[in-house]
Image 1: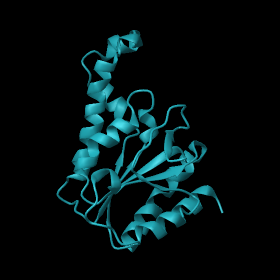
Image 2: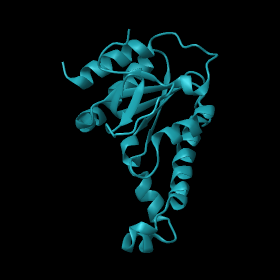
Image 3: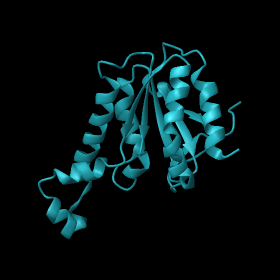
Length: 184
């Protein structure tokens, strides 16, 4: 079985478990962790995660961040200057991008069709790499989670540390890991 087959099987088992209703936002986050080399295979299988979710009696909403930076940059007043001199894109400028990403996810999490029984899934998180820290985005959106937030996480989880794209720096987060290997 492929890594994505195993991850999907583990997700099917996990999403069918009873949900605790009185948990904090960060504990409502699930990271479906997979090797970055499996990104295209995972993307092809996202509809199967939706099927597993609805089969377990939950509703599904999907947010794709893949093009978030391109859309943000397209509307930016100084985009031409940033293309000519990328060093002008400071942390202060990128804070605006982070705010846009947070708003996109929060809008999905708080939509009128989202309730405590909804899985809001986020794809394309790796496209934020180098622009904003995924940990900061997760911390910002956690208070808005009504049901569960499933994050397709292209990276690794080891010793309670998450590493997006297997980057050198990782972070310890309360999210529940779903991996191709069953958690004991």
